[in-house]
Image (cartoon, rainbow, N blue to C red; front, side):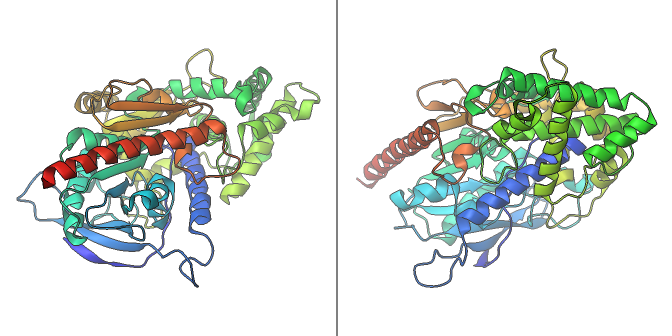
Length: 514
């Protein structure tokens, strides 16, 4: 059931996928900040005002079953969707469906990125669907365990199916119109899985930076971070990677040097609290690791507080004295820059505070869904970033057990349960060999998440595009004059794939009409 469109503006978030410790929370805030900057640039000032202005996107609500797999359960919730119909040429035209992920979905979801950029050439209707339990699409009743059992990628895909049916009826879309799914990060996985599981409803999908392989111990994340810090193409170097290691070694030295030195360290890093507890020290090290990882993950994107080149410049002190304190001073300055950009007064790392916040079951309308995403990592994906390999430049803390403890502390889910859930996810979707047809997997090789994606072609109709030196979902970001030639070529390749698919769809429509 569709509930009529109205006007509403809200944030569109592109977020980190980490499990929700204090480090992950910092990285999610960083993703939120970048997405807001990019959305504001795409919507522009004075949207919808004056002659020639772009029409304001419309918002609508679908009444969706809370449990689509149990027809006897009559409970429902309202799921938000956005509409951009300014390029829609006719009822036989294609529909571009942008899927939401682990955050709120705003009007930028139909005004920027691939769907909006490609819609004018194809006369497409652009729609986006907010993920259940995120943003304003949270079922009544809060976020306790009884409710959260209806939160999973499988339930989200069931929502895509019912939304496809309801929106086709609402907008009088032709039964022969091809539906193309788009998504980035976790939503990119959903786009690929929608085509995999429902090929009769979704004609093709473009999956950007999609981590389709669930993994408990995601040590490969920091392998890519380390490699990217050494890459001259994006401003890294062997010296920069060494400086990162030196800065973290200095932080660990000070943490083990007694209360007075710990207090001075906390003051220098703008810490919100004391560093007396071992669990909080581990969280601090994790937060610093997430900060550096975030610089790599979002390198070169509009709104990112620092690029790899800028971070390396800070850590190397402009080529001056390169003794151990200098990289630390550079790291301290990087912390200050990121916190200022995020509007945070201090660096938060309290484990007890994190657990208390994650246990809260009241939905946060303007929040980014921290409790919900932690639940999905505990019951489906894992994605716990560690630094256990010898080549990792950070501290080995926080280790995997402390991250898994969050699942136990917050939800009562054991480490063995989480490991089994991760294995079941890969069994259900196929991991990095999903076997879907007419899916384009797009990744950047500087993005730490690309190692969980599909980066090698698995067949003629399951294509891959690996963009050199590109960061997380960079292909989806608004075009800029500073975009690299490889990024521009990547976007052209995406357009060419779409052209091929839509030509196939047109031929099918013609045959069907004969």
